[in-house]
Length: 90
Image (cartoon, rainbow, N blue to C red; front, side, top):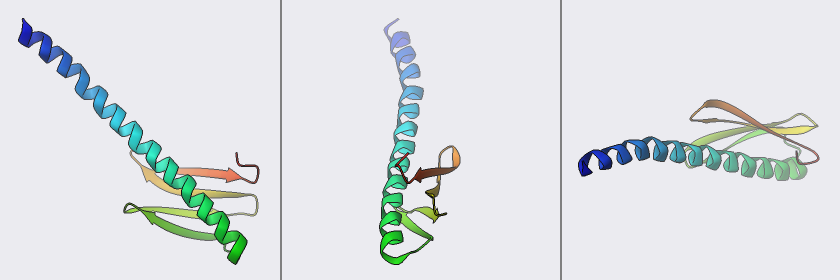
């Protein structure tokens, strides 16, 4: 009986821990995308660049500026993602 209870608990905790790990990883990549957008804003102001890329922890983050917003493209566990930040910070 004890072994069965332990197996049931372990069986439910393993998928939960994987889900939490995946969620944290995706959130970390979102943070890196925001960091890339900040660096892009600095480059836009200093050098008038409109595109670039940055590598963080072996992941590529590509950014573009269209005059209104900075968009950062990156790939997470869900696939290709785009994070855009406009002039007001939204």
